Image (cartoon, rainbow, N blue to C red; front, top):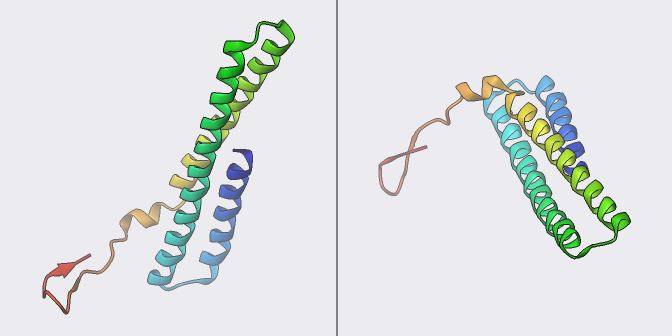
Length: 119
């Protein structure tokens, strides 16, 4: 999960650098879309890792009776919670990073096959 958070931060920084030199709105949207896809993949991978880790910790807590093992499992549970919060903060920051993107709508074109508009 921590790697996903770092990747999301890195993708945002890379996108910022690319947007500084790109002036065309279609290209800017393309860059944003690509970064969004990669961020989404990283977040989905992190969610799966969290679920696996959480199941493992919960199973440990159910079967562990020794205080030392239980304390280690509880510490891991807290670590997972903290990593989850860090990831959520990174995703929220990424979501607020480009307010101008909300004003963009893809151009509407007519399909050559049907003659109907498509977005």
